[in-house]
Length: 288
Ligand SMILES: Cc1ncc(C[n+]2csc(CCOP(=O)(O)OP(=O)(O)O)c2C)c(N)n1
Ligand code: SF4
Ligand SMILES: [Mg+2]
Image 1 (cartoon, rainbow, N blue to C red):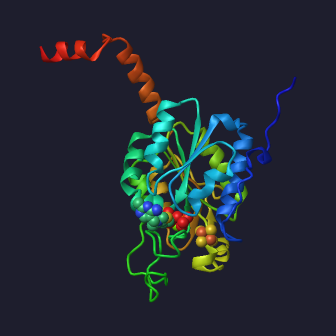
Image 2 (cartoon, rainbow, N blue to C red):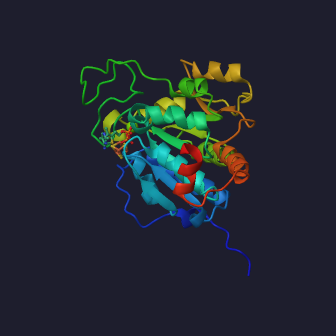
Image 3 (cartoon, rainbow, N blue to C red):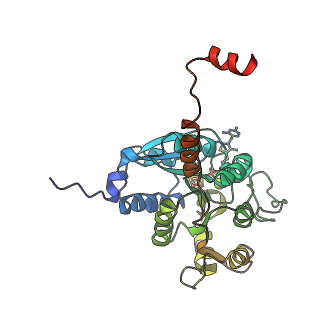
């Protein structure tokens, strides 16, 4: 019998979606459903791991293994899943607070280890779930629930930060451009190593409904503009862009060794050394 061709519908779940109408995260969810269908990943071969936040509800809406973990801790848990089950394809999802504030330490070390993960950060420049406080990507001067007269801290530049940390796949997308986002997720999931996709995903409830227009007017499609994503200096210049918001694949390094490959090599090395049957034998050998 011919194998069933999976479609985006096969990855939907019956879990009631409680995102606000108009939330940008719907576009991200659609793009994920389409991307995993394009890659024909059976649900039992897919894991979706998140932290805590509105965006981190996403695993509930994807028919796959899912784990809505702890605020800021999606990456270490996903790294463990990927390391112990290399047969699974692992997507990580979460918000700008989850990734770049409380999860910042884990972000640094996940990039350093280069595990086989595709990390989709739904960057809405606000803490949505906790009702509208400023986040690490809130622009200076924007009113928030915590600073109604304007956010005072300078925003972090996640693209420049990730590139400086030698991320091996870096892209930015807009949740209002589902086709481009889907293509980037497909490329990210084919990448051997860590793929970061920062997605501008408007929070209509706490940042108004003008951001869709802003990204449409100021968006710069670098894929169509002929950007060479192997050119590191050009990639850095893109991360410094002030007037336009770059969307597309910024940087890819296909030669870096992934954590998955590294672990294969380690297993091979250690399979050749003496195996111990019990702890007493180990203690006798090393502490005799
Ligand atoms: C350890 C811990 N600290 C704080 C919180 C409260 N908290 C839950 S979600 C969140 C921020 C959510 O913002 P973001 O990660 O940007 O996700 P969004 O809701 O905007 O999608 C905070 C501070 C928590 N759940 N756990
Ligand atoms: S509060 Fe904002 S981020 Fe959360 S579901 Fe509503 S629109 Fe989306
Ligand atoms: Mg947020």
